[in-house]
Amino acid sequence: MALAVGCRARPGKARDNKTGSWRVFKPEFDHEKCTQCGTCKTICPEGCISEDTDGKFIPDYLYCKGCGLCAEECPGDAITMKQEEK
Amino acid sequence: MLGITEGSLAVAEAVRLCRPQVVAAYPITPQTHIVEALADMVANGKLDADYITVESEFSALSACLGASAAGSRTYSATTSQGLALMFEVCFNVAGMRQPIVMTIANRALGAPLSIWNDQQDSISLRDSGWLQFYAEDNQEATDLHYIAYRVAEDPSVSLPAFVCFDGFILSHTYEPVEQLNQADVDKYLPPFAPTERLDAADPISFGMYATPEYYHEFRYAHDKALKDSAAVIKKAGEEFKALFGRDYSAMVEGYLLEDAETVLVAMGSICGTTKDAIDEMRAAGKKVGLLKVRVFRPFPVGELAKALGGAQRVAVLDKNISLGSKGALALEIRDALYGSRVPVFDYIIGLGGRDVRKRDIKEIVARAERGQGDEFYGLRQEVL
Image 1 (tube, rainbow over the protein chains, first blue to last red):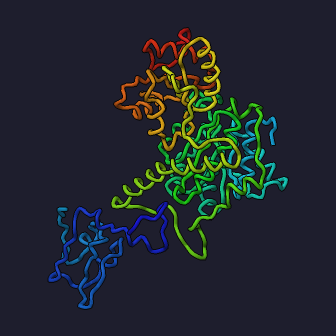
Image 2 (image 1 turned 90 degrees about the vertical axis):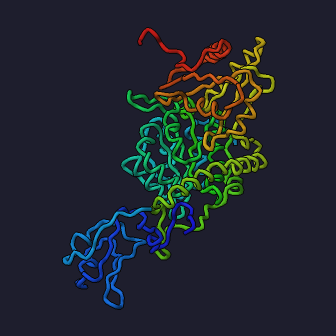
Image 3 (image 1 turned 45 degrees about the horizontal axis):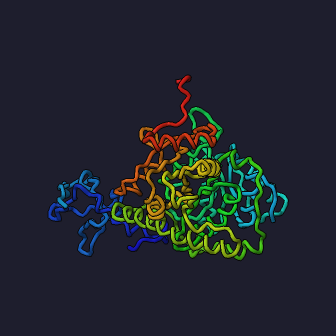
């Protein structure tokens, strides 16, 4: 994204802020344990978890801030927070 | 047309001729006369503008920010505690690159409460990213408003500007001031035509959020635009001179500098007193000169270094104090002269309305010649 004078932006430009850079702990999804209940997608405050065509729930790491709510709430303990080296 | 006018009213007339579309301000001594006069002009149909009455200076500048973002030429005026209350909005206006022009009738900051003049208020906003002009007399204060709008609205600058003139000393003093006429001002200052503005039919936001990946670069771009405005100031000054005869093309102005051994540096109305003191010192054989700083932001590092490089010593008159350090002007002049070996002495003077007389200027020169400086000048030891 090129800088706009005065940080001006058209609607929808918030997507340019890749909030994934804030992350310290990264949620890792174990699809063997996953029961596809969808709790992670519902609870994610960033709205960055989506279901793919196979019914797998996948986070978008460009936006995932690593808050850990998905791991905390997952009934099958299928999500683990791992410290990320950058 | 030449007339004897109170400084505030002369400024108000210049502002009227600049055709602001929105004025929002809150009364505060010694700035009040300016916005009272503008309110009269709007009420009497002499100025076609929306005058927004607000409940505080914070609201005044916030209203101006919105109006400016919506594409209006916008004006406000304040001083001292009023400017302090605008602190947050000042940074937002500058960061959103809105070319608001605001007059500062310079006054001391409390506590203790003082309604009298020094330059602590605008100096304290030196890091806010606005241009800062300082006027020596009411003619200059008046003219600098045209220059300020021209420079601020230049698309390559797109930044707000303070026009500072000393409270009471200029704002409440009657002086001969030549006012321009509307046709000439219109030639010099075309209507404000921003390329982007707030418009419900074509939504856009200003001053959005910048993550660590972008903020650093936004600050760089802001700093660069402010520094690069020096060339626009020069051009605006040259065009003003071509049309109206008075020359504001340089950011600093020398007085009897050529062979000066001691050079005084000052901003604002004290330059007039200093010139008179220099005339008397010159008559007595002392080689003294003055460098007047008209533009404090962007800081004219190159012009200053060139003008002061040949001096034997520099004595800076600071009507402000960065408490715990030194006067702001002297600090930056030392930086501009770094490596030149010209000694720079700082004198904190005239705070909170303390009068500075010709004999004080002469005493400061004598002190600088003795190598004595970096002090509060003229302390009344009996009250300490």
